[in-house]
Image (tube, rainbow, N blue to C red; front, side, top):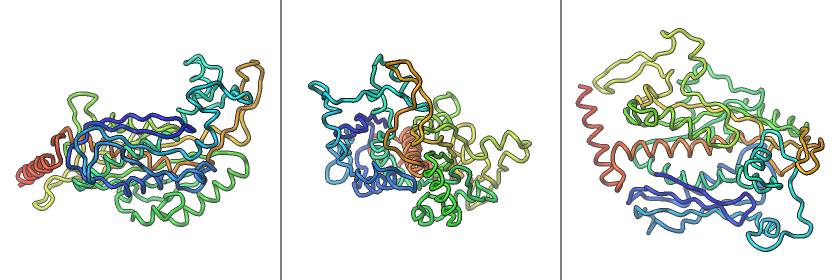
Length: 390
């Protein structure tokens, strides 16, 4: 499967087209809308979220709730378009009172994008570089999530730190697969620990008063994966490279770790690698999960655990210094309506990106024409593994 998105942050709509979807997959607009709502939630979000009420409209590729095996078009309307229709009009002359964006924000695509595209208005860059595009991506990834659910895979995310506040965990790789979804979804920061949630909220309030923004770290976990997804023969086959690339495609993501991640570099091998065991009931399994469910670029049957670090959002209410692109004189950076903290929202986006990679791994391994054949091939694969295990 592949997707492409189009649309500007303040344009009329966001559009996603998904190709390569097998026929016969049951889709739910309600489920996709639920993911869109989760993307908009989280303590520290800005004023834009009070305007938008993201809802998906499926325009093609689905009939009576099931995919046809043809491209699927999804649309999410921008309600804020009404306030921007003159400034973002695709045709006609610019309004006389149009103010060009000429004070690029440090940490954003503003300046480099303007230099690249030879524009004197950063608006032409920031509209597409905006994280608003992730709404279309979450809608597209809803298809991948439905496919994974059909083959018994659950995927979720939770936040481990915001700013200087971190959730205490004795053994993160073990605990990652045990958190209750209700504890995560009911937390305003997507943190399964209630005390840490309150501390994170206080940290966000403090940053808000100071005109600051905050980043943080979140984890994505996938349960129920069969071993052997991905590949080892070519670099592009490895799920580590695919998932890493998918997560780094999310705006503001600055680091990705699988399993222990950088901690593995500080330990001797005997405290890093997961011993292999075998039982008649479970077949081959690992007695620990320091690798985070991936070995040699492939799933090993253990829970997939991947962490990502998000930098603070570059729009600050107390802006940093910049240079006016028109006068070349020092000035303070522009201010765009923005969030104080969007780490919980980024975690939801990351769920979708990881889901898309994993769904493709299933399609490559078990067929992509229709769901009936895929499930039959998957069942045969599981049966073979069970036979080998004995």
